[in-house]
Length: 273
Image 1 (tube, rainbow, N blue to C red):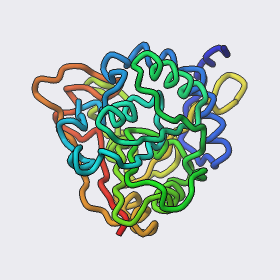
Image 2: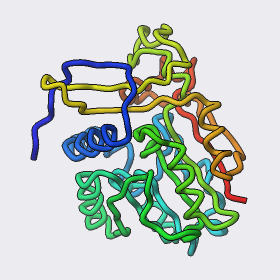
Image 3: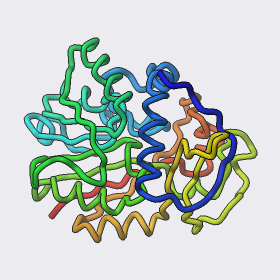
């Protein structure tokens, strides 16, 4: 396995589709096992966790009633990571297909599928160019997958709309755009505004050789809404999970301190008319 490159420089600049895809594929390939070791207990091997605020599909039902809207339905998980959400969907009686750009994440998902005896079809693909036919899924979902890591998230919306059947629901969670104003600090330092909410330049990490190792793209709430509408989808709800009083487990820059005063996650609930 390749070694983890040390971050030498952090920038805010434009990053194109190819640069973003290469960086994120490599980043997740290297860190899939490390990420699971750190967060696997919280995520579960076959559970659907929407966000660090402990927002779980079994409680909030953003995809609908399990018996009515999941059983027998084809579901596409976008940017699945190790496909924990898809295994939960399979256990509910759905027919999920999970894809990710990272082979390392998919290998982790294959191992977890064997361990849980909940194996789902796993596909390596770029969310901006889906290898699925038109109107082939009843639902699509993504819990912090793909959307913030691609240069053209509008293309992701168009592609998901293309593969959804009429009436199909598309629900995705991502870092709340408001968070981009603040440092990635779970403590008091993370409560100080550092940059403009309207600065749409990407967050880029580079190693000592100047190679891009990580890219995350910023869109405002308005940008997300316009991308959804332009793809022919209808926005039904925008959920901003509040940090639960009894939840004390931090996740990186998400923490009880910050989560109780500023939003950390935005979940967009949409459907194809």
